[in-house]
Image 1 (spheres, helix red, strand yellow):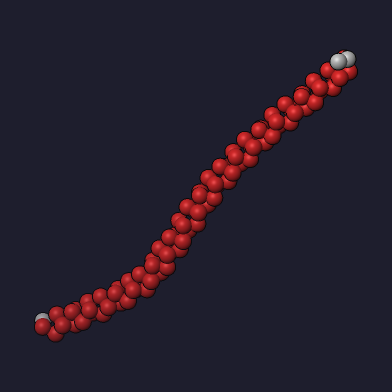
Image 2 (cartoon, one colour):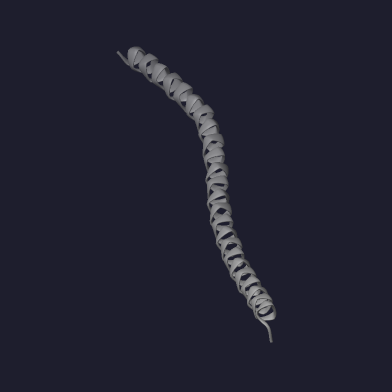
Length: 90
């Protein structure tokens, strides 16, 4: 074998080793990126779930606000009737 053949063989082997290293690093980056995206998606799902719960609590609060206004009106009316009743007794 002459030197040119040995150099070509070593060059081809070096190219394959470099290519395999690059592919392995690429797979690692893709795996890490997928894991990161999964974590972000899970956090976003949690945030969206919290937003839905907050919206439900706000709707319940608006409903309770209306009901509380009615109760306050009824209590005020009852106090007026009691005051009138007490004045009549005196």
